[in-house]
Length: 119
Image (cartoon, rainbow, N blue to C red):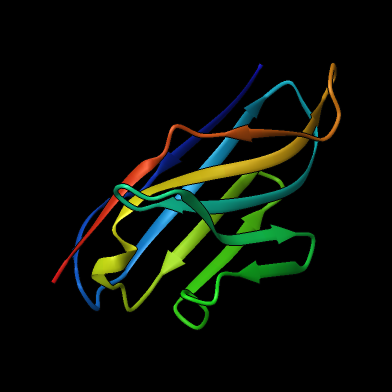
């Protein structure tokens, strides 16, 4: 069984900063990639940032403002969010594509953490 647990969400004023973290635990053999996804109220979930090895990928809307990083030893992925805007409000979900002892290359999701940016 695999668990992804996010933390770090909260309320912040526009222009402020917030950091998120996500820890993957359980019967993990290896983790290929990890990432963060954003679901604004009433909208579909969208990719914010992903990291696989040294390769990172960002949504255009967050380039230059958000930074994704990963601690491989701790199976943890981070998202540093700067210059936050009200449109960044929503639930942020952690994703990991990983291999367990039973399955290879499966996607797992955390339950999400709420970020609210006030104007």
